[in-house]
Image (cartoon, rainbow, N blue to C red):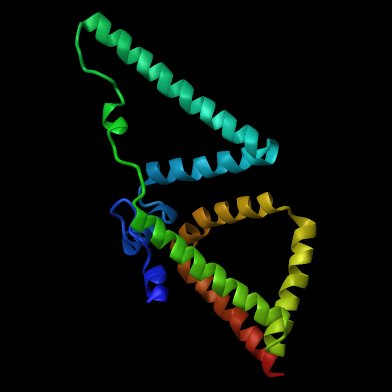
Length: 198
């Protein structure tokens, strides 16, 4: 039962897991160029900022930028209302009245899913480190050994930056050049199978 709830996903603000997947696919395939550009640009800006500044500085600068925008807009609307002699009220009234609290049930669902994933991860790590299955532990050791080389070449932010750029570019490149990519992948598979067969 616990597994089923976590794998189905939790509804957040009326969006279920299938809708989230569709939205993510639409973003990654650039179906709405303006929306994808905003998301991709925001991710890149955030990651480049984190490569230059500390997390505390980036958070503080983002908060200052947001406050500057909202305060400026509030002052602009107040001046506009005074000049036009209208009484539209607070410009952010709809957002101030929006309910943003989490219910006890939502918090319980989130913590149950988090507990499920943490417990499974701990069980798997225990199994690998205490060599319950020798082959799986050796595969894990090889993976960790390869990651030492990756870690020597790149830091975590660089890898994250490369992952974000790849997420937003590789699906589109594959769709546009699918026939050629599939042909070359077929050749690579053939060579790998020939080498393994020997």
